[in-house]
Image (tube, rainbow, N blue to C red; front, side, top):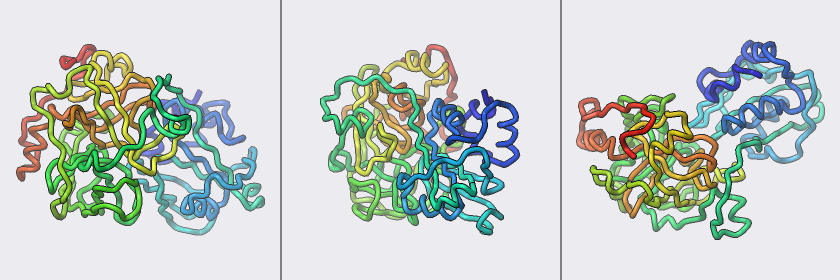
Amino acid sequence: MIEWWTKTHELMIKHGVTRKAIEKAVEASDIEFRQGFMEIFSLLARENVPTLIFSAGLYDVIHAILNKEYAKNPAKTPPNNVHVISNMMRYERHFGFLSLPGPDASGCKEIQIIMKVAQVLAFASTLAVAANGYSFADNIEKEEPVKESTGLTVNEESRIYGGKEVDIDRYPFAVSIRMDFFDEAFCGGALIAPGWVLTAGHCIKTDEFDLLAVLGSQEREGNAGEEIKVVKGFRHPQYHKKKHLYDIGLLKLAKPSTHETAKLCAEDGSDNEVGTVATIVGWGLTENRTESNTLLGVNVEIITNAECNKRYDNRITEGMLCAGKGDGKDSCNGDSGGPLIANNILVGIASWGRKCGARPGVYTRLTYVMDYINDIMGGGDGIHAHLPTQTFTQASAIL
């Protein structure tokens, strides 16, 4: 109905949401902004976009976000008379910045709010403000995965994507990547050398960003574990955001870590053969769409790229590795950059996917980028490393 909304969920991430653009979307359809905007919500849900919608005065929205009170005392969503608070809102998905440039209802010129793995639309309404509350709706419409028996309790089933809590001591190389002024993980990684963390390319925005690598911590937040500042970030020179090509990067640490490093896969690919059961660990979203407070792990079976391509419209390349069969076991938002382990060997890095648990997860195949990794850690720039071309085929050469 609204092609503008349905083509890509990156719309609100890359371009922001302007008043004019919203009006254009409304004019192009019979959808009206009322009753919680559920029509648009449904469209975003089909794209697996976690979404928060607030309808209130700006102060209420900020207070709710910063104090994590979005689920408390919701007011009725006001009908019809809704006005956008700001001229434009920008959300940087992986680092969690929501900017509300002004001037706006409160007179503020610009406000930055820290969020994670969620799109945010904020609207002002005299009715909502008069009610001295705010309206909140959560994105609960999604393609439900078909679960297999996992041997877990009902409570465990309700809070994870087919896995369970795992001990950080079993995965001492697992890294939670955080911003040093906001103590919560937004991506994962793997310690592959005392001074180097391997992660997804899309987890690296700039080598000047203040990041922390945290090792040995069971929790996704707090000051437990070994915290080391990141001094430089490297992203593969052929990384392609939309096509997810070469989604790999490295973080150079300010000092060597004392934790055990991950064992890297053999270059012949013998460690990631089809049918191998691998484990993905991370602190990302669970089945109830909340972030896990503790490290979780799930076992997934490595499948052929040809089989994976059937679920992803031939978007899988030789540089990607797929695991999981859409049976409710998967990595999810927030697990990006996390390690995929097969027989105690690091074989992949969590990269992308669609509809967590309902389709295979897609990982960067490490055998494809080992030359780049070794070049960076050896002091190179990665540009002159052997960089094989990733091609899209209906039946990938790597099965």
